[in-house]
Image (cartoon, rainbow, N blue to C red; front, top):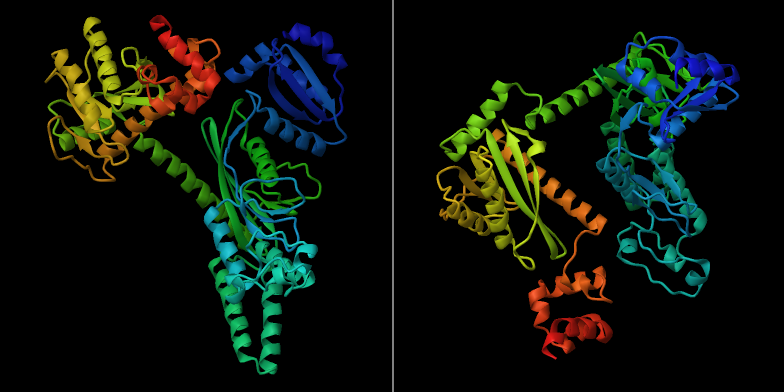
Length: 603
């Protein structure tokens, strides 16, 4: 849409608040935005020059515009965030967060169980969370299990079943971890009181639970039941220890959400501290990819809305590092100058800085982003550790892949100067090997790869890694000898999972130091060949491009062919089976089709 074309429709766009959606000529949603005045905001894209290249490209691709009028700027803000989350348009901020968070569920059933889950099902159960740490969830559940007797069995404790006496108490009852509702030894009302205590613990509100336990301890002591009083004292001590391990800021502070942000080029990093009853209950840092040079205010607003939605926060106060227009009218935005809230903001900034540096460190371990000298140092270290005659500036790695014992393929990845050279990656469909034979497959692909490089007069690698250990290494070396390449490059085997390196003819393996830069590079190469091979295999399966002789038999489909190959490993072995053997595997009708296909010429 040109500026002139837009001028013809601009008067039809309302001045009300709302959201606008840009589409390309194919109907693909490009961008979703919000506005106090739709006409003014949309017009700004077409009436002025944009310094940002991506913004100019967006405007060039806009074919038509849709908009939705809402009652307020707050409604526009919420709708915009919902649509971005749902459709993830190309030119909107991309928040990289694909984790499935853990919850604690109070199951909707008689005498509800309390347990860990990642699956939220709309069955009437209460889901508390989400939490950012599985370890944190397990710690909370352990505190609950020790202090609040609840059942852990999955029995159907309906009133009818309990009255019929269908169940007997288990060991958990005798250990004091359950009050025996299965035999009617605990009422539902008493069980519900326990659940109320659970909810207080999960909200970080331990005072009511501790006070209740103190009352019970005093009652037991007054009644001269000192053993029971001692049990309650230990539970109080357990809860106080748990509270002490949490980072308590100020118990009078209440509930606050704290956010900080760091921008680095086209990326931004946002940390979230969740404060419940003056205690840090959760922390989460996310990465956001900017598309149109969005400012920190816009990015932070989007991240706040996303994270508060994910973690179901209704906290009335948000602490941020700079003034922010956040259109939820019932939320207070605070930019602290000092005190406990300022300390929390500094802690959040410390977390987001650490997250950014840790990402950078991981990137460095993969050698991307390193200087030539830094990459060379890792390669020199690998040369020394493996006693290679030449610096391994060109490394290739091979791996075989198959699906449930059928459809073999192989992959080769290439690293140059310690960095993946993806344009040089190669896939191989196995051509000369029938059935699954990793050794013969490796021999075939190594021969095909280096005979091709020789024919095209391409440079050979200094180091070749055969993923799979001694067997595959021996097969690869047969091809190397056949091509008269012994001494032209170093070939080693890498034992699967063990990270042991074998040289041809050596009985003993080499194990590099676990945290050495050399082994980190080898791991990177190995992981990449696994990823590349598996991706190729999945693509082939999804496209249905795997075919074998069995699938050419009329009446035999892919599922039956796969079943036979999984059991008998190759078409050659299937040809030798009797009709009775085939019947036991796939039934008489299909067995007759397969047997006649292979033996009709003999009839």
